[in-house]
Image 1 (spheres, rainbow over the protein chains, first blue to last red):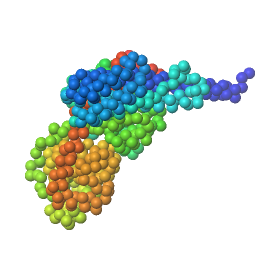
Image 2: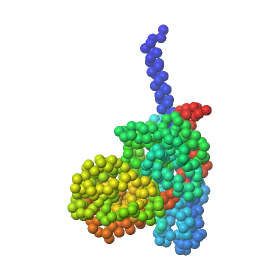
Image 3: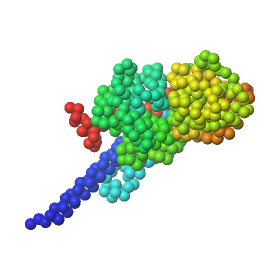
Image 4: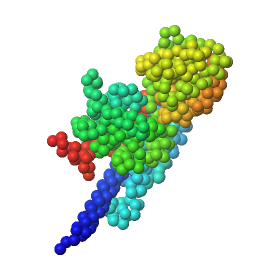
Length: 174
Length: 387
């Protein structure tokens, strides 16, 4: 004989289970979305570093800057591998060197189209990096929640990592 | 590049965001990109081919003010159709947290999405960050743009996260080189431009300063350009000063440049709620010397010295600055010159290039913008209703 009280208890239990399940599914969905964004951001930063190296190579090839600047830039380009993960050291050095070279050449490093290409390339690196750090922050905040950790909601996905890198763009003349 | 732009506010009504989107379309098209715009509107009749209506805007009373927004099953469906029909490389939504089309678009799409945050001050028009839906929207944006340092600060505090600052652009050529309105400029005239009865536009501050200015400069006049009840404005002015006021009526985009050139000084006495101050860039482009309140947004547009500033909401300080400038033509010329230099930073050509760089920095190459159906009951439901 089933008591009416028991029916209510079972219904309540069922409701709680459904709500918890929904919450977990939503959280897992969010984690997935955040990881997708992180992956895209990393890919994008890698791409922008590669494109910046190309723009620097073009600037050097144009020959409008002094030979020492050209030499230093070529050396910095040679120091970065074209394959594999982002090399924070080499990219940071290139960023710093670019700022010095542009300043030393009074903000002009080539004809308008080459200069604009380099300016855009440097901007894009800075933007991609800012957006990546943002994506990492949000994803890590989620990953560090006790419930997410305890229940392993993120599966075996690696923790997103900050890329601590100097990406500040040079100041070009107009 | 194929670019989809979403504007959350009624396309048929005037507004800063709408103007910004129109300019954006013009610049990107000029650079050879394919642009499509989705915005709330009563229809597509007489509209350009790049425009798609997301459905009519509805009036919603929201935190005490009335906003015109598009939402509901119809607009949701149109947003999804629009995203499916145009194979965008990047989706750019304006004011992503406004409860309208922008939010629906972010909700319905996946891929490279960029959001521009405009008016941080008008909280009444955006969802709060604590809202679960706002959270989802923010998480889907791959890049965030703030239109000013002031907007960036407020939004960083309000919703958190990293923003790149790209100012609103101004079409310098269109504003430079126009003539003043017929019969203008007259000596010692001050111009006010904007909705006259909206308190935050600060007309009351200027009118309060008038007696003091008139005592020092007897032939001073004030030109009022903008919508608002003239009788209500005049009622607040002491009878002996009423003849100093001239109403120019509503000023459309074409007459704006001419109007800005029609006075000795352009006065922007706004008391708050400005996140950018596009009007100041227009005044600089038109070559008008500016007197503005010292709002953070205005300070950053004027960069310290491209306009004269007075203490916000202080009629005495406003009178002091205005009197000084009316007596000093050399300083007025210097302001115009510095304004001309400063406004180059807001040149649309440069701004457009910066925005395109943001697009490039979120595009990863393999996939463009797709409809997002994952884990979204609302999305599936909307899709189901279409079939």
